[in-house]
Length: 116
Image (cartoon, rainbow, N blue to C red; front, side, top):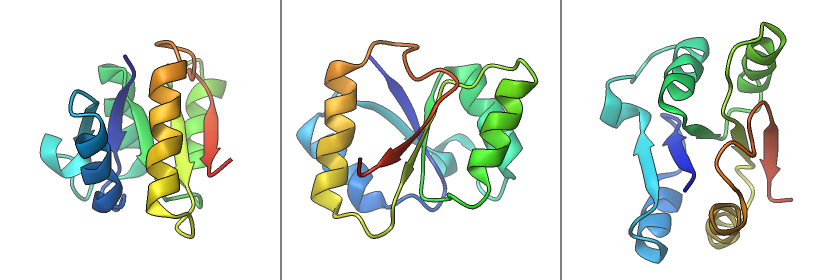
């Protein structure tokens, strides 16, 4: 099963909705693991060490740092960048489709955008 890390400013309504729809989903928030206020490279490093795909709304900087990791040959389990304009229900559905249809490691080195 895919494992996720929700960025510090990721919409908690989405996180709560994911848990309601799929109580066994493996998702932790940055603030739950002591990473509040940490910079993007630190968060991506932690996610890589834990094998977690980062859920974020931060399209301005995360993409660059994620691809920097890939270029440097470092692990990067994946990033899912979610538009702030997307409906919460659609985001929840899209993430659940990824959980159901993706295999562990399938998003390695990729940045995906939701909604599709």
